Image 1 (cartoon, rainbow, N blue to C red):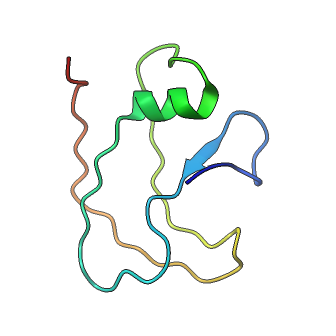
Image 2: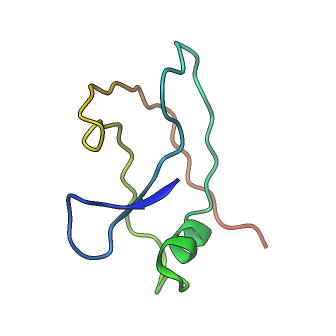
Length: 79
């Protein structure tokens, strides 16, 4: 689910990849950040990605949130 941030003004969007109780299992996520950018802003990124934020929060729901993150890997776009 793509959402514009209610906490920051300007062009800041968040992508909800998982929600609710997922247990103790590790999950793998694969993203194409250029396509995510285009879907959020309606245009291609103006250049290479310079940063990426990964977080877990309950700001919108007012509930506690907990997550562990590990083993990030950035790969070039295929094609």
